[in-house]
Image (cartoon, rainbow, N blue to C red; front, side, top):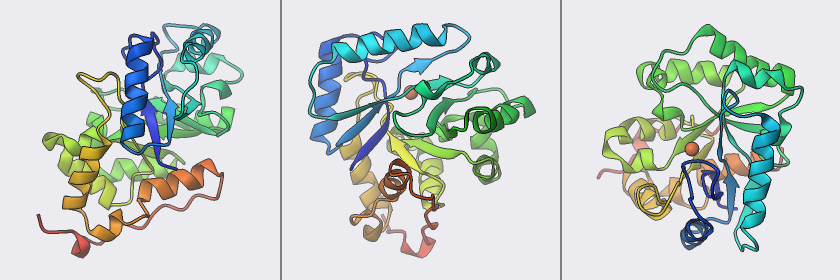
Length: 250
Ligand SMILES: [Fe+2]
């Protein structure tokens, strides 16, 4: 299984695909790039929309896709805020048939102690595992790096990284250090459309092949191993950090 954990393929849901044709183009692009399973993760903002209304919109959008050769799994990219906790169950926001909930956190402001309490409550109240969406994009992570990643892991969170963060030279150093440090459980394209934010797994692979030792690329992509474990509900084992000595000279 080659998994894209984070996509905005579903049409008319958010700032992602704006039409069925655009959704179909994203699906074809992912298949061309070797992806076999994509999780559909439209934005959900609990302070803007009720959960039943969101789920109804999502089902309508999903049904509009029709038959598709790519394996599509329903999920969400849920913004973590107090409004979320008014519901007795939020299991339908989690990645279908799993306990994993992709969470978007505040980008610019420092993360408060309340936010960490909310992350704990995702586990204690709903028995779900938070997956931190594109962890490398948050100012709090960029500033504190390993200490905050360790804090998230200690809370039982999993980490998702956007492949564009490896492609983009400004964020590449942090993204590669997270991959090499063994922090990343999943990667995702976070694709929105074919013009500005297309899926770019081919380019991502080429850059990794240059930047990391070939063994890392050889059939055992760390994120695939972790993703497979997660989706088959095996006990989680965080992958070992990659030795700096194995880093390729570029
Ligand atoms: Fe996203």
